[in-house]
Image (cartoon, rainbow, N blue to C red; front, side, top):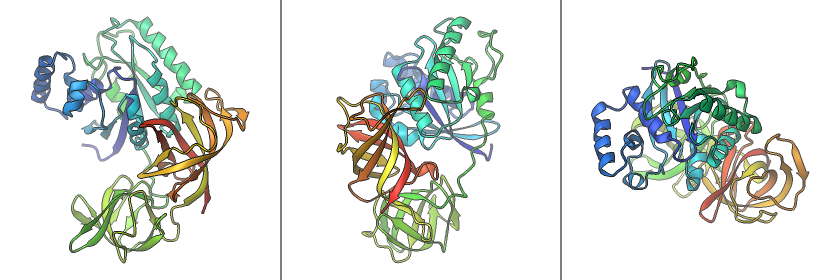
Length: 420
């Protein structure tokens, strides 16, 4: 078992085979025993969904089985020779883009699944654009369902060309992208080279995963820990809980919670019900701070060092991508912004420039409005105090989703913060 760890997002259009691929990876790496797959196979066949057995491994929520759609982000682990992988299975459906945003922002690298018989679909574009906006650098592209197109090399080449164009459009470095013809259902080129693709001589999927560069944990950055919940535990007192995004927390540190603007000394840190002297990025911790009461802090606060506290925005400038909106967005529009664990209504004060998404160049200064498909730089004023950071400094706290009318309408990253 490897000590090194990677968070891997599996992205792509609905029905292109993401869940089946994940199930196959878990199966091939021995993370799911044979009899479990057998059980799922019988259940899938009873429901008239023969062929979904690998997907069932992931979609273990009953509702998902009935609908045949992935809703939640299931965290699954598997080990290769090089890494301990946690799969952040990113749902492909539009209403789940918000999960995808919180999911993708925690991924180090991504596998983009594109079905050979379907090619680039609308959500393929959306997910690639989001992955790019949220700072995923390395992409492995699995051209899936090769069995459906009889393992034809020219079909594969066509899809590769199509995806390459898409990647170039959103400024992904295609030199770093690796294309692999696979069948998640049949197992071609996943754990061993397939006889069905004699024309392909590149890496198989597991080798490509092993060859990913090791992520640098952001331990050098200042501590940033968004609060998910605040509990009162008898004998200890108030215990905020959250996941460390950057930096290190030690017992004895003086910390500050923003925007609540309270602080104190860290007395205890607990992880998996055990006391630990310190915690690092990716750790989910509960901790106790001297003098902090349950009503002093809340979900959405960010904990950081007292001498380098998290910034609180009066206004901030951000680059956003509008994915779907029934009409047009103009200055004065106030949807809800989801940033780390915070949800705050924010007003778009001004639309500063419209960008050409294919080149990244400025297409128009101070446009009157933006609409679906547009990328723009906007100035935003939170209606309640919000702690957020420029993504160039602390990317983990620099991305957000914008929601309105029950759906995710845009995603973005913070360019700079005008502090309170």
